[in-house]
Amino acid sequence: MANGGGRDPPVYERPSMRSFPIGYWPEGTRVVLIGSHIRADGRPWVRIRGPRQFEARALGRFLSPVAPRDVVDQGFVRRVTYVAAEQWPGAIEVCANPLGGPEEISASLLFYAIDRAAIFWSSAVPTAVNLSFTGQCASDPDDHADGQNSIGWGAPISPDGGALLGMTVHRARGGLFQEADVLISRDLLTGETACTPAKRRRKAWNCMADVLVHELGHVVGLTHAPDVSDSVMRTGIACERTSRLPDIDLRNLLLLAGP
Ligand SMILES: [Zn+2]
Image 1 (tube, rainbow, N blue to C red):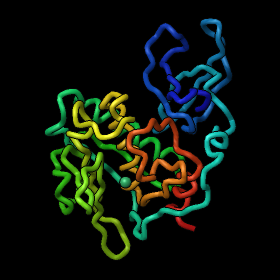
Image 2 (tube, protein in one colour):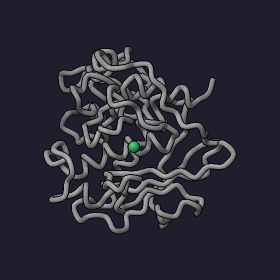
Image 3 (cartoon, rainbow, N blue to C red):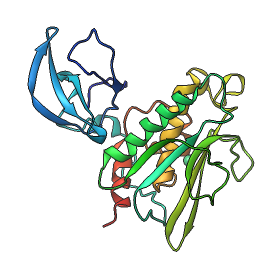
Image 4 (cartoon, rainbow, N blue to C red):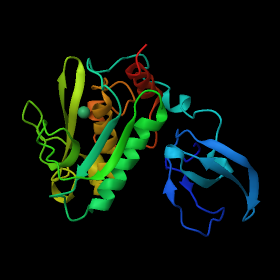
């Protein structure tokens, strides 16, 4: 998917602009064309198969055979590695506990944002990670030994005592990840206590969606990228809009897959 101009291109069940989109697939999402172009509503449409074999229709102009990355990646440091020493032994499943979330972010918005972030990481380089969101669970994201990778609300604090938008904690043994849990900040993602100017200009749930892209990057096994990169894994990213993963993150994802 491409040419969204910073927004995720919409996909539809039927080739009609009058119907409501059934989803928004981030730029850079790899899709397979099924059949040929058709014309409907005076526009060229394509039938595509995207993440999880999901089929949809999209306007032809949102498809590109070339990954639309180089323009964005210009001017940034490109060769840097931020891969954790440990690896996952296999597929990664994450669930979410919506308990204690703010009023303005419903459980379904939380689930949608997690699913979107999971698709970013699992579809960009399909051979690198197998990450999926399994839905609601009752797991406590502060319990790192319950065998469930869970995402939930809390008040994450950095080692130096500062409040964070989100935090991921791994448990590992013998070079392998056993569990990863993500805590997202109820206070920093909502209203008055919003921590950064970028955050204050954006809706809480939008910001949460981008924080989750960063945190799921940690879950799959990436550490922090330097601030001079355009990685979604840099610490200073706060809640900048992420419409697709930059090249540098794809390169690091490939390293997760091993030599
Ligand atoms: Zn981080």
